[in-house]
Length: 374
Image 1 (tube, rainbow, N blue to C red):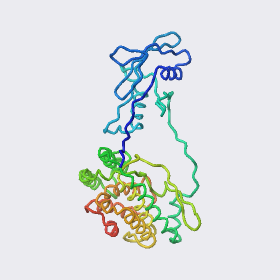
Image 2 (cartoon, helix red, strand yellow):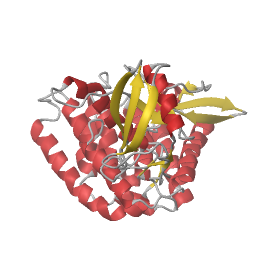
Image 3 (cartoon, rainbow, N blue to C red):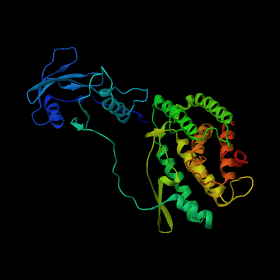
Image 4 (cartoon, one colour):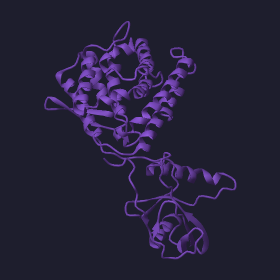
């Protein structure tokens, strides 16, 4: 079992690395003239730069002397466990502190690479990522085809393969209780999770008026306190495993797949991934029905195959004790009139009923899914 938050070794930098960085930012005339810790006598021999150890620099540019402080953030359990957490805060400070009267002015933004080399980030506006192109069609297209034509044995096998893949990645556990609590806290309060999604619904919303949202939020807080005792479950996760983030291709009469857009962290609660894909089987299964929504037919087979395979591979019956608020999060997404404006009303109403009812049982009855919808 490994830590979800990796320990960082102290940065080892010498004057030559700082000199190279200064020339990146200020040009070839930049020259480091003095280096030391804040509040102490400086020397050019400073070699270690760790969290909480800011350095004072003096340097010249075209003969004019300048003074600066070089610092990084310390990792902690308050949402700063990872370098990308800390990067966001430093980017904010670099962008905005110069516009605040009397605030110390920013002079540079950069990062240390794996060799402790300093790389400048100059005048950032937006960041981007470049990833490989993977062949395949979105899995949602497969589900749309099943709505029209029905499921094949290969479709059922693919649902089992999804579950098997999740079982494999979820087997990698992490001993980091603070990170598990953070993931639960984010599930409930983050802008892209439960409370943020509630705020994104129309207000007031005739199909789910404010008093129902208030009751839902209060019940979710009760679940937050329940989940505090499950921090041993922290595992590697995808974080957004749904049909639009899954690419499928045919391979010798079976389907193979790849995934995209990992979200919200490397470690979390396995129920996050299981709830996301399984509730999308429910969503597609409700289409084309009239009257009271029920999961039945081919999509019930997909849902059942997925759950059976996952539980058989993992033996994780405990997941049924924690999955409810993760279903609420995903249910708010797929019931959203903003994200899914064309749902037939019975579909949306069934999903909104599900949000409330799934929280009322201490253990999710995955075989009895229809009692949460009807």
